[in-house]
Amino acid sequence: MPIVAHSGLPTFRTLAEAGQPVLSAQDALTQDIRELHIGLLNMMPDAALKVTEQQFIRLVGGSNAIVQLYVHPFTVPGLERSAEARAWIEEYYEPFDKLREEGLDALIVTGANVSNPDLADEPFWEPLGEVMAWADEHVTSTLCSCLATHAMVQQRYGVRRRRLLNKRWGVFPHRVVDDTHPLLLDTNSRFDVPHSRWNAVSSRELREAGVRVLIESLDGDFHMGTSADGIRTVYLQGHPEYDRVSLLKEFKREVDLYLAGEVVGAPPLPDHYLTPGAARFAWDHVDRAGRAVEAGHPVPAFPEAALSGELDNTWTDTGKAIFNNWLGLVYRLTDHERGVPFMSGVDPDDPLASL
Image (tube, rainbow, N blue to C red; front, top):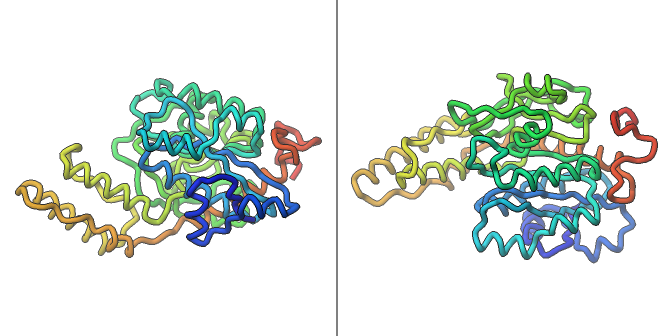
C-alpha cells in the first residue's frame, strides 16, 4: 500500500512525481485499512538530509503489506545545522516529544557525520540514547543504519568500532549466512550492498555480544544482524537505501575537496562500482583537473552525466525485499493500538516464535 502524504513534506511530492504510490491524507481517511506509523530519525548532515528522507521513505513505500504507511521524520539535538536546514526541520519535521506521546510502530535511525574518535563524545550521543531507550520499550522494531549501528552496539554491548586503514566504499558482494530468519524470505542468497565508511564493527565481536548475524560480505565484513530476539533491533552497516548515483555524487565531493586543496591526494574510485571504461574516464578527469589546478587553468567540469550512464544498480531489489519483510513482521507483531509493541500472547523474549 502507498505512503500517506500526511504533511507538507516535499519528499512526498517528489516520490509521487517519480512514480511512487503516494496517497493523500484526505483519501487515506476514506479507506478502512490499518495504519503503520514509522519514525525516521534523520541525523544526516545538511547536504544529505533531504535525499536520505527520499531514500528511506521510498524503501518503506515498497512494502506489500495491506496497510497505510505513515512516515514521521524527526531529529535530535546536538547536530550542527545551517539556518536553511534548521528552517526545513522546523517546518516539516515532528518533535520527538509528540511522537513519543502518540506512539510509533517502527523506527528507522540514519547514520550521521561525526568528529570525535569516541562516539560517546558526540553531542547527539545522549539524545540518541534517550530515543533508543524509549523505542526499546514502546516500538516493535528499530532499524539502525551504519553510524547508528556503530553507536547502538557501543551503547548496548560495549563493542567499539575500529578505524580502517583505507575507506571502505563501493559496492561489495554479500551472502546470507542465516537463511532461517524471516527478514530474508524471498531474497537472493548472494547480492551486492553499497558501503561508505572509515570504521567497522566485526561479525565476530557482534556474535560474541549476542547479535544474530544474518548477512556478511564475501570477505566477512558485517552488513546485517538483529538483536538476540530476532526483531527488536535490526543493525545495518551497509546502505541498501542508496540511489544508483549516490556513490558517484560522493566521489564528486571527494574530487572537489582534492581540487580545492582541502585534502591531500586524489581520492580512490569506489570499489566494484564503475565499469572499466568509466573508471578510466573518471581517472582521466581527475588527472586533467589536477593538472589544470597546478597550471592555474580553468578546471573542467566533473563528467557526472557521462559517468551516470555507466552505473549498474545491483542492490535495490534485495533491499526492498528486506524492508518488505521487516514491515511485514512489524505488522504481524504490533497490536492495532499504536504504542503497544507486541500482541497479547507473544513472548517478548522470542516474538518470532509465534509467527
